[in-house]
Image (cartoon, rainbow, N blue to C red):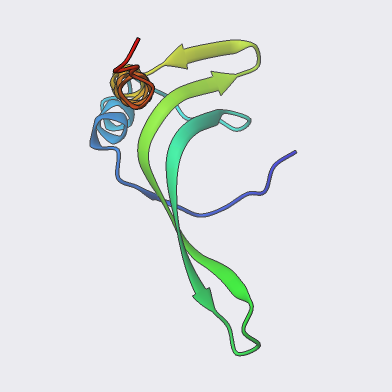
Length: 92
């Protein structure tokens, strides 16, 4: 039910696994990822999306199967560590 977009794949680990045929990207497959969106103002002053770049593939999903990527695990651990650091109670 989502929008189909063209994107650049900057996740070199995911790209290499696809080239080595360890991952097969098939119709209906989805990726959860860190997505950067470049935006510009058009002549009417409206913001439009012009480029999409996948920085990190967190997981792949197909039907009911979900596979967490190694780089996705690292990303989620880093996010969790940042969250814990921000909520550190210095006076507790």
